Amino acid sequence: MSTTVFVTLEHIECGVEGCGVIFGISPAAHAAMKERGRHVWCPNGHEIWYSDNELKRARDELAREKHRREQAQAEAEWQRQRVENRDRSIIAIRGHHTRLKKRVAHGVCPCCQRTFQNLARHMKSQHKTYGTEESA
Image (cartoon, rainbow, N blue to C red; front, side):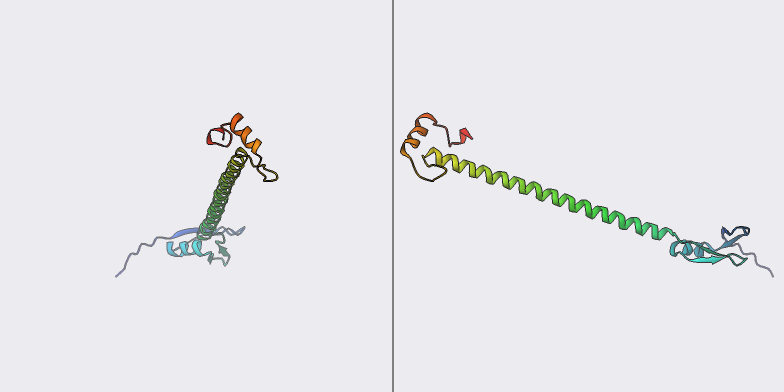
């Protein structure tokens, strides 16, 4: 009684100069070799390595992409904070400017903080809109 068995093999060619023998291994063993960076020997005893395996390349690329994403997120957060700080600064400066204009409009010297009646009278008669929202 005889049995016929069909086996699928992945073919490998020995890369050692002068050897060049072609042999086969199972698809599972070939995949494991590529994935884990394993080695196999050709029938003539030469060792064949898959050193730059696909899984390692994929993991390295994933790590690089994660690093790029983290850098981009950090840059975006820094820019967002920079814009917020600038906006708060502009609001604060605008507030100081408005308060100063109102004080001068009421006759208070911006340098010595003293009140002068003639300054107040002048501001009210000649510069009616100074220190109001209209003059801002």
